[in-house]
Amino acid sequence: MENFKILKDLVKFNTIKDKENKEIMNYIENYLLNLGFKTESKTKNLIMTIGTNQKLGFLGHTDTVEYIETFKNPFELTIKDEYLYGLGVCDMKGGIAAMMEAVSTINFNKLKNGMKLYFTYDEEICFGGTYELVKNNEKFPEFVIFGEPTDNEMLTGGKGLLEYEIYFKGIKAHSSNPEKGISANLNAVNFIYELNEFYNDNIKNDKEEAYEIPYTTMNVGIIKGGSAKNSIPASCEISIDFRVANKKHIKLIKDKIEELAKKYIADTNIIENIDPFLDTIDFIKNVKTANFMTEASFISNCKRIILGTGPVTAHEVNEHISKTSYQKLVKQYQELIYKICN
Image 1 (spheres, rainbow, N blue to C red):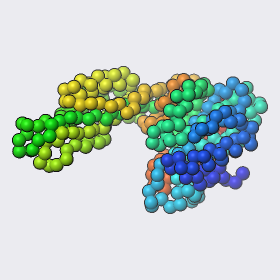
Image 2 (image 1 turned 30 degrees about the vertical axis):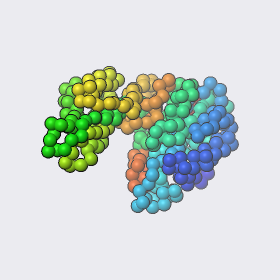
Image 3 (image 1 turned 60 degrees about the vertical axis):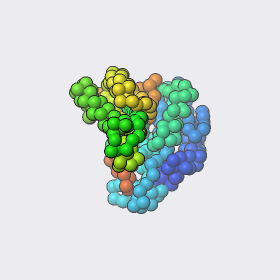
Image 4 (image 1 turned 135 degrees about the vertical axis):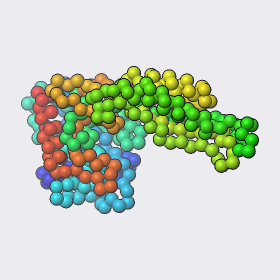
């Protein structure tokens, strides 16, 4: 096989916002059918199986982020010295290509257990493909590998996500007579101040050392309020997210936000509420975890391994991985197939 041919073919598909979803799924399906896999399901997701008693799964999303205009030839795999450049080579067409190459070398007739491969859509925006699998009560194999970029490190945990949009309601008045109004902006500011104090006193210092950043983080990402500099603002909207290191923090934060929402005249809307996870896998001794959100966080009925290429250049201009990392990943996937499916 031509060096990096599968990756080269995958990069050619424009899967920004799943534009060429059908085309890339057809390519993957045909490749795997020729290896003896069977199509179990095909929507905008694709599920392929081989063998019986599928003990190992692989999950990879086919969509990519948009590219910045300075990215040269985003849909062409460019090989320069030690590196492979192209949109999605890191996140995560490199992982998909490595898995496809790995399974092409395996004689599944000699293995006790089979495999199940999942290829999803809409990971970069709304996790639509993963939600579809969960909604359909998909029964995952005992082990599932997620091919997100990790620079060839096996990660077995990930932080949760608690994300809010909060809407403050005030009363509009002229700024020269503030007593006639209620400032939604000031309510939002006071809300944030009190929530931040609560976070610092009750959440931040409760550490989970398994994570690189060993505590739950809080970020006020968006504040929008007011219509004129001389008007008391009648509305203000904020967005807050917490990357959660300990499941118990979720209830503490929720309770505090609801308490403050009553105090500061606000409606709350939870956008995401995902638990953190930390799986114990016997053959992985050095526990490492992901600070970023992956599809692994949405799936709870299996043991999860996040393992992909490097260096981690996801969402960067001139996204790239190294040849060495890709080749090592193919071998890592082969070894895990033999270890788990034998």
